[in-house]
Amino acid sequence: MSDDRGSAIQSPPSGAPRPVSGTGGEGSVIYLAAAGLHPAYFALVMATGIVSLAAWVQGFAAVARGLFWLNMVFFVTLWGLTFIRIVRHRARVVADLKDHNRSVGFFTAVPGACVLGSQALLIEGAMNLAWTLWVAGAALWVLLTYAIFTTLTVKATKPALADGLNGGWLVSIVATQSVSVLAAQLAGPHGGAAGGSELLLFVALAMWLGGAMLYVWIISLIFYRYTFFPFKPSDLAPPYWINMGAMAISTLAGATLLLAGKESLLIRDLVPFIKGTTLLFWATATWWIPMLIILGIWRHIVKRFPLRYDPLYWGAVFPLGMYSVGTARMVEAMDLPFLSVVPPAFFYIASGAWTLALIGLLHRLITGGAEGTRAQA
Image (cartoon, rainbow, N blue to C red; front, side, top):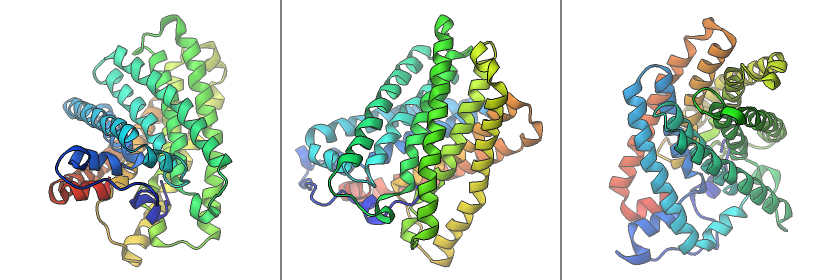
């Protein structure tokens, strides 16, 4: 998501069928929205969920619960549009799957499910719903990981590195770590895993380590693309903060392992390693923040790139909220009280960003009508 090519993000792949216009059937607003739905739109659920969890950590229970129920609406609506798109606009879905820039957006469905599962477990105590969402998220992770990477590997015609590689690939790490986080939470005192907690902690640990290795592979190529290829303002698409967000959720996954695995022989033997690696992830996430602010200033102030609503802005909200929650859990797990000022500060920043993005979405829906929905989804 972080430096998606502008044309690839904003419109469906060339050659995909266009929806017909009209007031009913496939020309209705719903079908138009489904036809143009960006694969990464589940970032809306990710962003709303993590702001809700950040509110819960900061003690704003009513806000957290309100955002949970709103997120349930977002989740069901997006899956409804997704199913319509699969059934009615299968050619578009296949075209997205084969596109180096858009295909990785499908990974947002995994953290969408798992973050909502964390909300259900921690905020509402809905253990059965949390388990259902974790199973769904884990199954989606397996399906999407091997479907997307296999498709992009074996396709005959591929773009150049500068055109095909973008920060959206890091959503695959976010997806992996979201499965780890919810597995560890379910293995902890809130999840009631009982005899299966050790197995769940092993799964969480394996996913955490695998996600970390995947980050190393992908961020190396992205950093190479940043520094050795021409870079235009349009290349720095809204959710470039996912460079930081992938490390923030890795921090949360490590801290959650420490908190949930206090009685686990497996985790206790690895505590020094987990602590050191978690701190490494947090330091990396923190390193990215000034860099991303500078690049944002360069994009919008120096180069005067217009700032307007884009659905991919939800992918920029998520890392801000995740940095708040990840830091809070690390402070708790590693007893670092001098960092306790960071989580509330980023909660307010994330809440402000979420509010602005929601206003942009509502303005688009109200003023854009069916055409706006088709163009921007």
